[in-house]
Length: 183
Image (cartoon, rainbow, N blue to C red; front, side, top):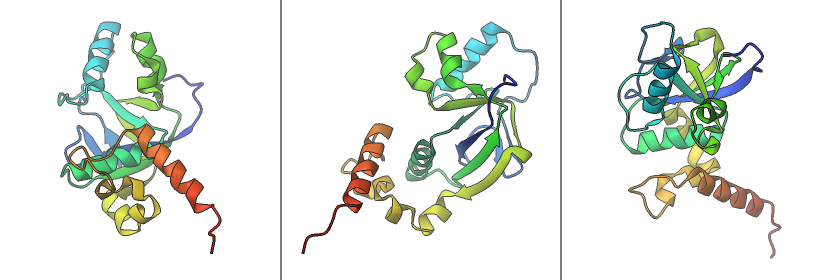
């Protein structure tokens, strides 16, 4: 976590099934054995962390600078029955760039382009706001962004389409919103 990283607005999405401790008072990774980490352990842990099916705790905490990705993760978690889905808005310069990290270990950069990793902790002072998925839905999330509503997609078993598909649909909805209505 280089000191020359700029402060960014980042998003952390979690549920009651997420690893570690996540709350308005900060986020702690699942692995809290703070220690000096060598390259081999860093590679091994990163491989476990990037595996979405992995349930073994790691010392990484994932965030993104992409609000559509954060919302997509939240809606998908909710769709799959996970409870207490939350999104934290974070302002910090205490992160590692996932893209650079992935490249250093030989992974495709596009996989981690919007990934920002924290080691062991996101401090309470870095969390600006936390909002639940339920609150967003009750305040009209699916009316504002109907593309995020799993009911709008033909393959509801999978929940939402890819981020690219979501962005394309949001773009098309925005374009259509500004077309003149002909009588």
